[in-house]
Length: 239
Image 1 (cartoon, rainbow, N blue to C red):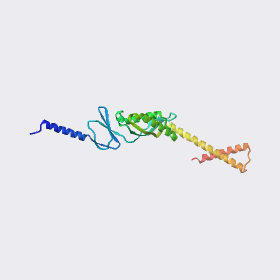
Image 2: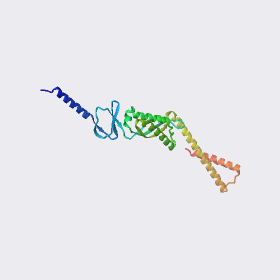
Image 3: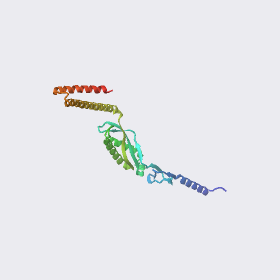
Image 4: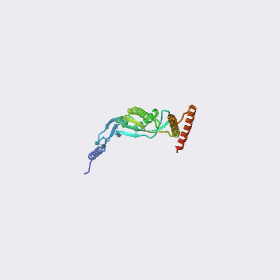
């Protein structure tokens, strides 16, 4: 005789319940959590793994709570003398409070990057070729600043370390010429010290063996001639 309105209503209700039941099935994974919110209010966090059911009427947002490594793009910084640098940092961090990370800020990853940029503007990074102690001190200072700024939004920062430090493009060529000049001056000073030591050793041996008997004037002349000879010899051996 056909179905009446009550039967259609019952079938429709059963279908809606079936869709709601299957629609709420999801799979929880290790290191990931679901943040639940309803009407702008926090309703809880689901951290279980495996097959589980969450009401499809409650909006959910998936958050990665694993320990994560982030290598930044080159960011502007400066060394102790105010010379511009380009620094890429390695950040080790994780989401500690899922509610704050998901609902307290629009995008916690963007906020982390902005905090790193702000910290680099305040901390003096060791220049390329600087001491290891200065680099470690800069990394510790960056870690403290970023951890303090990101703790309010539920992030836990373990370390912020400069992974690559270079001079900024606008000063890279000038700093390269400066470093080459410093190396050249160091080589010249080392060569002069070697020549002086060789001359002193030669004059001392001649005097100790009694091969020469020189007064002060003759000794100065001999030292001068030996110095010129040794310097000329070093220049000839340089390719």
